[in-house]
Image (cartoon, rainbow, N blue to C red; front, side):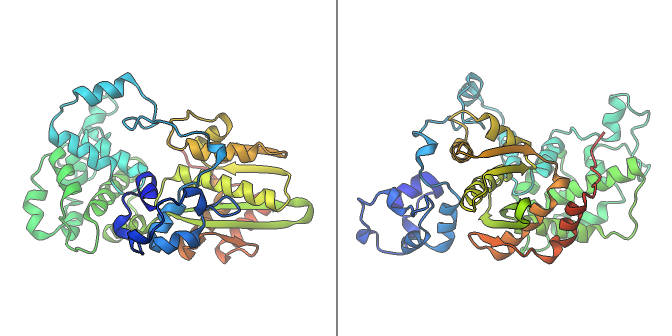
Length: 396
């Protein structure tokens, strides 16, 4: 059983076993580790494995007939579906090692997707600096809007501008300054994502670097487009607070239920650990559907601020999709004899559920049910009750 879990879920587990491998019954089937409710039997798992490894197993859906038969997936594409293009790239791609390396490091950067995408654009030199804006005939001058001294390239905007050099000097180790400020763009990004150049070993430098670049670009845009200098904001503190938030961030799933005819209000949160937002949202619908059914709800409206998840639930996906098992379980639960509606809601209208998710990160428990909500949810609940409108900020 341990070997099977290792192959399928979280890697080789022999070195993590809490008991002698010789005393483990190799004839035990995986289904024997499922409880009466169809979930993992945590107690049995913890007989053999440490709690942190058990937590990794608990983030995976247990075997279920609704998920269908095992399916072969193509690991060289993001959706698990074979394509001639992905096969061709696999066979013939022999690009420069440094370029392959930099893209791999960017897409494995341990932080939000928006910063990862930003780093990708930065490495390709595709940020909309003034030099790029001149090339696209959007402005007449490519000079930096802040120092008004040199042309604003990607490197100048994020590293060489006189107004931001001191920010880097506060976080880069002095022994690295000469090299740090002399590399070309591609080498600068790659080496900062692969080496430790920070003043402190207690922080992950590639996270600090990614956040610093993203934050400096964000401030630059505020200055150029909004004329918002934000006097008094310490860039050093802002960067480290955001980086610390990313390094400590893990996934939590949350749901809120309301039963109008009996004025019942409740919710739950579950700690999932590291994982994608999409998987966490589907987990929320699966657990919410189970809970709603058990509590006797027969007319249920599920709302999610992830349009991707709503589309997957409503339209299904190919059997090769990495989340196909989760989608099948969710659709199986929603196909019961009850009235169910699934719809998309903007993040601004989902703030109570997002607030509850923070409880999972703090409690770290498998699942918490609540009828009395945290104090920081009070104003959000009041706003929902009165129908308070929340402005939605969008890029134009």
